[in-house]
Image 1 (spheres, rainbow, N blue to C red):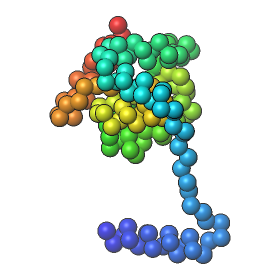
Image 2: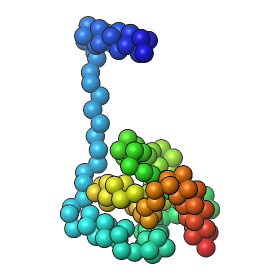
Image 3: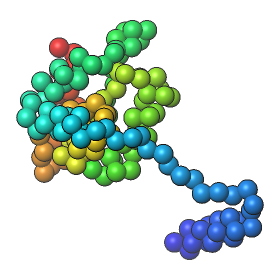
Image 4: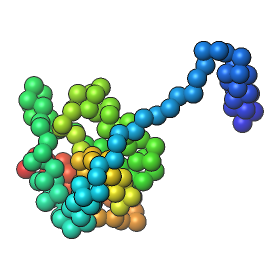
Length: 147
C-alpha cells in the first residue's frame, strides 16, 4: 500500500541520517551434532505419538510450583520458519517453562527443524486437512498428558 511504502521510505531516510541506527541481527541457537539430530528424526519417524511423548516427558522437568505444569506449542512449516526459535526462547526465558516445554510438529519439516536445533518435539502423522489435524491433535495431546 502507499502508506507502507511511505513508511519504508521514511525509515530508510532516518536510517541513512541517524548515526545511532543499526541493523538488528538475530542469533539462533547452535545446531546439534548430526548424531543427536538423526536420533531425534528417527524417533519422530518410527515411534508412535504416545511413545514419542513418553520419551519427551521423561526428559522434561514439570514446574513444581505450578502444580506440575508443562507446556507445548503445535507448529507447522509456516509457523516454524517464522517463530520456532522465538517461541522456544519465550517459553524458556520469559514465561518460565525452561525444561518443561516441547513442540508438537504438524509436519515433517517442523519435526526436522526442531531436531536440528535440539528442541524437544513430538511429531504427529501428517494430514492434508490441517484444520482437522490441529483440532484432533489438541484433544489427543491433552488426553495423553492427563493420563
